[in-house]
Length: 333
Image (tube, rainbow, N blue to C red; front, side):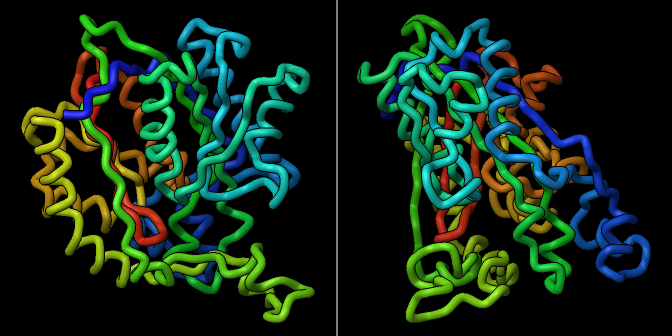
C-alpha cells in the first residue's frame, strides 16, 4: 500500500441562495410536470445569481473549511482550486479565490488543478503526496462550480441535472499512530471517450479570431450520456476492484462511498456493478444535482456533518470525469 500520513482537517460548503425546483425546471424545459425528477432524481438545485462569481463562492466554502479545522488562512501554505469550470481563461481561479479571501498580498501559492468532475479527487491525490513528503504542510483545496451558465437547454436530460455550488477541504499531516491516513489512490484516463463530454470552445482550437471559428453552441456543455454510461459500466468494476486491492481492503469494510454525483443512472450503476449497499452510498443528487468537481467534497462534507462519517472511518471517494477518466481514493478519515 502507498500509505500517506495525511488527513482531512476540515471541510466546508457554500451554495447560492437561488434554488430551482424540479417543477420549475420542467417549466423552463417545456416538459410535463414530473419529467425532470423522473429523469434525473434532482428535486432541487442551486443556481448562482447573475453576477455571482465562482471565486467568491469558493472563498466562502474555504472559510467554512478553515473554521472547521480551527485554522486561519495564514496557517495554510498552498491554495489549490480544483474545478472543472473556470471563472475566466487567465489567470487561474485560485488567484481570484485568494483575492476574495482578502489575502491578495499574502504570497500564498495559488494554482488550479483541472480534471473536470474529478478535479477535487485529483488535487487530493497530488497535494496529499506533496504534504506527505514535506513540500507543503497544510493545503486548502477548493472546488467552485457555476455549471448553469454553460448549459445547453436544448439537451434537456443534461440541463435538468446540473447545479452550482462550492466545497472545500483543508489537508495536513497526520500522526502515524492516529486513525487518519490515505491508503491508496488511482486515476486512469481513456481518451477514446474524450468526445463524450466536452465544451469545444474557450481554448486555442475554436476561437472567434482563430482558423476554426467558434459558434455559440461550442461554448456550451455537450454530453453523450449513453456512451459515457456504456464505457464506465465496462471499466469501473475492474478499476474499483484493483483500487480496493491496492488499499488492502474490501467494499464491505468501507463505511461510506462518496461518489461523483454524475446522475441517478450512474448511482444505480455503482450500486449494481460494484456491490455497494444503499446504506454505504452518500447520495446528495436530489438536493444538489451534479455540481461537477464540487460534488465529491460536497458529499464528503454532508457525510461528516451528519455524523455518517466519523474520525477513523474508512471512506471511498470514486467517480468518472470527462476524458474519459476514472478516479478513486481510499482513506481513513
